[in-house]
Length: 255
Picture 1 (cartoon, rainbow, N blue to C red):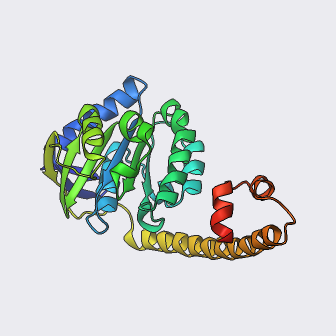
Picture 2 (spheres, rainbow, N blue to C red):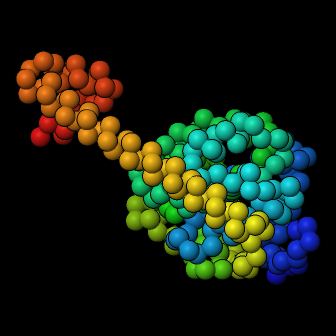
Picture 3 (tube, rainbow, N blue to C red):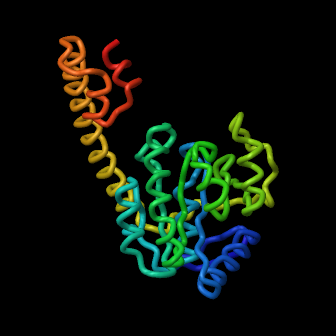
């Protein structure tokens, strides 16, 4: 472990990790690269703490304004980002473990890839499951993976080893491919914890409100679909085209 400073605070980073981050900083600023690091692990294992430490080390100006909890926040943040800045997408409140949620964030990621590169950004994304990421994002576009296998302990995968892990582990969601190195991280939280928790709670409340609104909308939609089909006002194909849903989904609604 190596002592590093963050403003008035001192904390420790794994020595190998620090060396890798030093190389990343140099390549981003001197060779026109970006860095897109995935942090994977169960909830409560420390992904947020660890990602904030890495972001703060890469960019001393990293702050709570560059922490995002929804795809919309992340998209807006990247679009307005300044060059060489660090950003964290924290899945804590958004439930990226679900297939539907992962589909949405994968679409957003593909949309902002070129912007991340042109602005030479450091992107750290906290996710519960590496193998639910889009193939292009997981294998090709992300530049590294930090797998937190227990609280305070991680395995680091570089680009080639990460690709091998995705290929060999995807079927059973297994992390048996050995990392390049393993290390530890400390409990130091670089940002104001109270402000972070408030921003997170605000995002949770907003997301739950939208979820309730969407649930009510789907209930009304399903009633309308059943009426149209059962009374033969429209065909399944016509309903599908009108609501932009598949014919199979129309069939599930009416059964």
